[in-house]
Length: 96
Image (cartoon, rainbow, N blue to C red; front, side):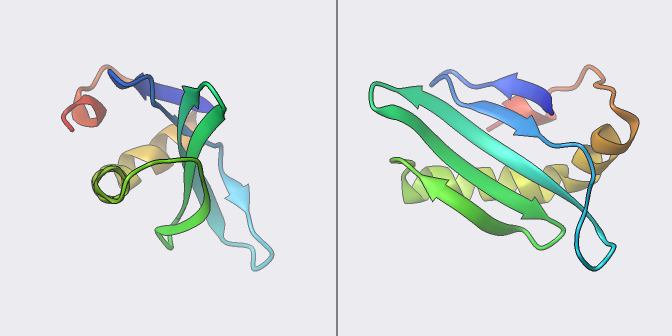
């Protein structure tokens, strides 16, 4: 897992390493998670489908739309990090 950034509301953006699915395709998971008094707000996207595969807690529709934009714009970068395991200095994830 690779933590890419932490937003002002304490949401962390984390991506998985490459996962090989049952069809032999490379996938990764992009996770947004925020600690709350009741546990965590969690939203997990899977690439390359961009589908939400887990949604728990109280992220708003506006937040989910914003996170989807981050996932769409960062997909190529996420794959590079997942493959190479390195982070470079970038502000792409903190622009939202």
